Amino acid sequence: MGEEFLGGILVVDLGGQYTHLISRRFRELGVYTSVVPYNSVEKHSLAKFEALVLSGSPLSVGELNEAELSKFSELILGSSKPVLGICFGHQLLARLLGGTIERRREFGRTGIRVIKRDPLFNGWDDFEYVWMSHNDCVTSLPDLGEVLALTENECIAAFKSLFKGSVIYGVQFHPEVKHTTKGLQLLENFLNIAGVARNWKLSDYVENITKEMMNEVDTDAKALIAVSGGIDSTVSALISKRVFRDKLVAVFVNHGLLREGEVEEVLSNLRSLGIEPLYINAEDRFLKLLEGVSDCEERRKIIGEEFAKIFKELIENDPEIKYFIQGTTYPDIIESGVVSGSRKIKTHHNVGGIPPWFKVRILEPLKYLYKDEVREVGRLLGVPETLLKRHPFPGPGLGVRVIGVFTKEKLEIVRKASKIVEDTLREYDLHDSVWQAFAVVGDDMWVGVKGDERNQGYILTIRIVESTDGMTADWARIPHEVLDVMSRRITSSLSKVTTVTYAITSKPPSTIEPC
Ligand code: XMP
Image (cartoon, rainbow, N blue to C red; front, top):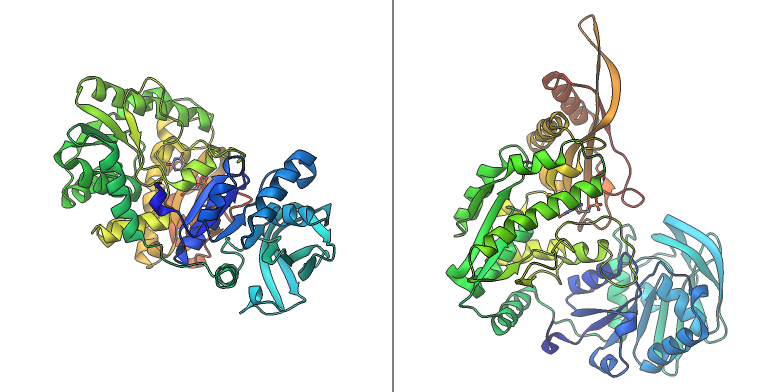
């Protein structure tokens, strides 16, 4: 974003999966953050921030050579700014101060003991649970550092150093992850210690991004936007409409992988917000290409490419179109491995799916926002609560909820069973309290018995998760009686399903969608 946004915290991105979550949490606390890949951080730009935060990384500190270490030392320790290192950042700081790192893995919910009271742990008890995800740990520190907390495995869970008068903290755990119950409190404590101003507001974001787009584009040209009825594309369309007014062309493509009743619902929602979309029914075109394709990433590729072809055709037929707007958000970028150093998990088709022959400029009004921030911006722009409460739905739709060979039969099973899952949750007033709820089907069969007849049928899995941003998630503890209702409804209305299971794994180690 433009220079005017600078201030607050510089999050040095060392490639960790949670880097943007760190930034998101500080924003939740009213602080502007800028995420910059470590190899792009310049010494002079550090002056523009009040404090530095170092992220996690898939790297190991032991992999860094002397030249890299001395560069980090000059940049970070020489910055005279308050610093908080998280996970790899913690290990890196310890190493720069002369500490020892050993191979020792800790993963998931871990207890830590606070052994030295410090303002960083205000509001924390002496024993707390935190979220760990690391292979190495800091085992000793020189006199420059003071140990504040330890894990059960005697890893240094937190330390403090007053290096040349500026305060440096390292925490081995992830305070940005909700599973660290008092993580947000710790981040707030750091802000207080570092004296960081809290003046980041989402309403400013809308004004600033609108101004930025107005300055950058020719507002007499047309801009094309693909709308899906989801929050991201709807909010992108509303922001873009402020810039392009009636020159905004919103297109809603039905790829045949939508939920039951979704087409009518999306069209009516968009119309109520003053967006009249061009509706393209491309069901046959997509399903023909997907039939028989087993690999999910391959399906994502096919869907992405087919979308791109449709948009290419539209652009070629209207030379006034100079821009293409995408609802890309931070997690889309980080999880697709676009940010240097981060490792690819899944290809989200709206990132990196834009082919080079797309001769229009891409605009991404939401690329600095997280899902819950997008929702908040939507609220500010008048998006009705019913739409804001819709569960997130992946771009490739039900195409990523069929495991194994893709067939129309399995697609229909997933579509119908998902409706049952969602409707049942609504009936029990549980729908709005979960992040996503759907059905998944694979190729595995289970023998069933109907009347006196033995029959073979699919195993269908219900996946219901709680999350605040999709980066981490926990399986929802749905009452057994509700799961029982879902299971009975599914097996009685779908003759090809004999067995229903419930997915009880959090993210990580699993992901939300099955593939
Ligand atoms: P995973 O499955 O990676 O999902 O834990 C995290 C969140 O992202 C959504 N998701 C996608 N969204 N295209 C999208 O636009 C995709 O290919 C895709 N895959 C996953 C998922 O629904 C969840 O909310």
